[in-house]
Structures are given as C-alpha cells and as structure tokens.
Length: 290
Length: 337
Image (cartoon, rainbow over all chains, first blue to last red; front, side, top):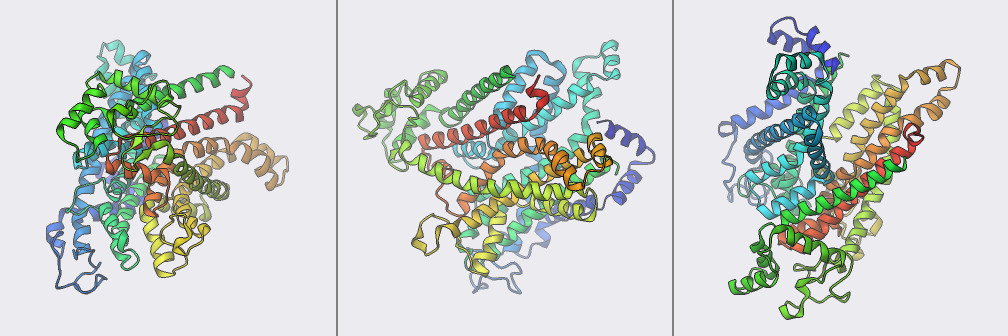
C-alpha cells in the first residue's frame, strides 16, 4: 500500500500524459502488453472493414481443401467458413463480455468488501462466510451448474462470472479497507461528521485503486480464459456467431486432419490473455519502483 | 492449537453444508423443472403433474432441501425409488444408505454405481499431475528465486507468465497438433482402454502434461517470490556471514522457511487443478468425474449433476482444510502458541 502512495507522490509531477510516457519508458513489459491489447481492440472495432468475408458465410465452391490458402489465409472450418474472418469478428464478444462482466463483479465485490472491512461486526461476519463458501467452489463447477440450469447466453455468462469473481474481489477490498480505515485522515473525516458512504467511497476507495487496477488486469486474463473455456465446453454463446472458445470446440473433431482450425482461435485467446498478464506484471513492476 | 483445528474443522463442515445448499438451489430451485427432467422429454404433462404432486415439489424450498439432504445421508428413503411411482428406479443397496445420490436418468442406473469408478480415474489423473507439478515448481521456483532479477530469473518469469496465459484447452490443442497429428507419437484420446492400440501409460502423457503446464507455471511463481523473500531475511544473511556453504544455507535455512507459503498455495491450488481436470477430461475423452459433470449438465440429469458437483466441492473443501491444518502444524509460531 505505502509503496503505491510513495510512487504516486514521486510520479505526481507533470501532466497525466507525461506520467504515462515515463511509465511506458520504464516498463517494456507494459508496452508490449498494451500494444497487443490495442491491436485486438482495433481488430474488434474495425471488424466490418478488415474481415475478408462475412463471419457466417459458407464458401462451398471456394474451398476444396480446408487448409490455409491464398483466399483463406487461416483456412476454413468444417462448415467452410473463413477462419480469419471468424477470429476477427470473434474479438467483439470477448472484448465486450469480459470487461462488462468483470465491472459488474467489481461493483458487487467492492460494495461487499467495503461494507465488511469498514463496518466490521456482524456485517463482516456474514460477508466473510459467504465469500468463504463461494470461494470453496472450483469455478468450473459453478459455471457448469449455473449455465446448465439457466441455459447458455451472454447474460448468463456475465452472471456466472460475477458470481465466481466477486467473492475474490470482495476479500481483497475488505483487506485493503481494514488497513486504510486505521489511517488518520479517516479518523479526521469521521470527526468532521462525514457519512459512512462518503468515507468508504471518497476517502478509502481511491487509496485502494493501485492494487485494484493490477488485480483487474489479472482477472481480465482469467475472465477471458473462462469465457473461452465456457465456449469450448459448449456453454458459451449460442451458434452460429463466432466465439473463439466455441471455434476450438467445433474444430477438435477434425483436429487429426486440420489442426489449423483449432490452432488459430487458440492462439487468439492466448495472445489476448497474455496481453493482460503482461500489463498486470508491468504495473506491478512500476508499483515496486524497481 | 487444538481449538484452532476444531474451529477449522467446524467451519469446513458449515462451508460444505452451505455449498450443498447452493448446488441444490441452482439445480432444483424451479420445482417444475425437477419433475420434467426426471421423466424426460417424452413424458406427458399429466405424468409430470402427477410426479410433481407425489414428490411434494410445491413444499417450500428449505423443506425440499432438508428432504434431499436426508436422502443423501441415508436418513430418509429416496421418494423416487418408491415402487408405487412405477419409474423402475431399482438400487441393489436399497432406498436408504449413506451416499444415496439418486438415480441417473442419463445412464439409467443408480448414481452410486457409476460415480466412484469415475472419481477414481480423476484422482489418478490429478495425482499424476500433482506428482509432476510439485517437484518441478519447487525446483524451477527455487532456482529462479536464488537468482532474483538475473537473466535466468527473468527468463523463468517470462516463460511462466506465458504458460499461465494458455488455457488448458488451448495447450491441449497445441500439444495434440504436435505430438498426435504431426509426430504421431501419442494418442489423441485417453479412454483408458487398449482397444485403440495405444498402451494405457501413453494415454496419460498428454492429459498430465496439459494439466501440469498451467498449474506448474502458477506455483513456480509463488515458490520464486517466497524464496526471494526468505533470501532477504536477517537469518539468511547471518548464515551466509558465518561462513556456511551456499548449499547448506539453501538446504537448511532457505528451503525450510520458503516452503511454508507454497505448501498452502499448492494445496489451495486444488481448485485450479479441478477446473483443469474437467477441461482436460473433456478434451481427451478421459472417463473421469469432470467429463461426467459436463455430460450430466448437458443432458439435464439432475441426480448426476448434484452428485458430481457435490463430490468435487467436497474434495476442494477437504484439501483446503488439509492445507490450512498443515500450515498450522508446519508453523511453530502457531503450533506452540
């Protein structure tokens, strides 16, 4: 915690832009991570213009062999759809569902964690017990059981991720709040007669943002993996729209003949996940002020 | 110290009961569903309504949960096994025994008949993965931790970060492309039968590798950090200054203290391992409990979903308990207090 504060004081001079510039110059890992992330964001935004074909179009005549060719750089899948186009369009659902579900999870986790950490007493007891129970579940069990009973859809994926991620976030925030609430300025705010809501959101939460941002990036990686796993298990977005995990699932039966159909979407997931892991590592490195 | 252990045991039990309630709620919250799924898609509306009434499905959810728990621990007879219902659910063990998970509509036999063999297979897979992960992670993690921020350490960090970015299904696809499709050294599926012409031990190699890659990367990072931190403590500096050989410092002072945190981490990683086991079993068609969970979920087999998820959660909770208790026993500061 104190490392974050010192760092902010040290880096406090100059405009936000020049602060970012200096941070980037200090951490090549952060640069690489951000570059990969911006690449995928650009791909997702520009999908209609850069994708060579429509994602669900079937090219029966063009494809005699499903392997990569001049017309279909990454080859075609078992339904003769262009894999490159499907990967490009498939960047959209991941980059939409992952942040949306994680932000929802953060809203729940931060509220519960702040309440437990700041209020203490029975609130803390109840929240902590619920966290313990939810964290005792292997996430995949929660996903499979939840989505099996509610049916696969974007909304239910969000629900599953909120349910599985928010307890971890709440535990982290609770710990940070327990630490920060002992500081003098919190006591000062209480003496001023500020409300609990004001204190937790204006005095405590901003100070916890350093560790929370790193945690967010790490969790983005996990969430993208989770969305991929759900797609792979057949619990993801309903077909026919492209979904990276689902593409790998569709391609595994023909893996023996056409490994490319599973390989390219797998690589897409790996690069996006590693982007967030690199960003998290870079931020942590800056935080420790190496 | 005994009070700590007893409290931990009690809280594990409470967690287990709460977890079973969550599973029950997720699967059986809507009572209409229960009757429909028990009878299958071809039953008429009247049959569903009849079963709904016979099973008292309009009781409050807590009452239904109590009944379900009663059947599970063998205090109550399974209402579905009542011959008057005419469902033909027969169980040689009778209708009242501990671990009565009910009757699987997908496999058409009592859940207890299928689940334990599958669990055994999964445990075998997990044990092999564990036996690979622990020594590898300790070895590589210590190696990197002792050379903190030198090129070797940076290389380990980069490789483990990359490996931790590869979900199991992706590494399975990548490894299968190389070793199955390209080189043809290993089988692409692991049904644990020799009918396909592949010996059993070869069928284990890919699943275990896939499982080990992801979790090893994760645990290695913890071992590395832990070793790094211990290296900076005053007692290690003292050991070095009093002239101990580096080997002795590492063996006697660093390892014993640095293994505390990873020990818990490794056992707490069981949730990761379990998730990995589910995905790996699906990829390689391995006959374990994880694939069974997914198949049951796809089919809508209520009894089997509950059984597989409950057993998985029970394993996770008891492993965490062992991790916590082990930590207490290993740490003299807590043990002797």
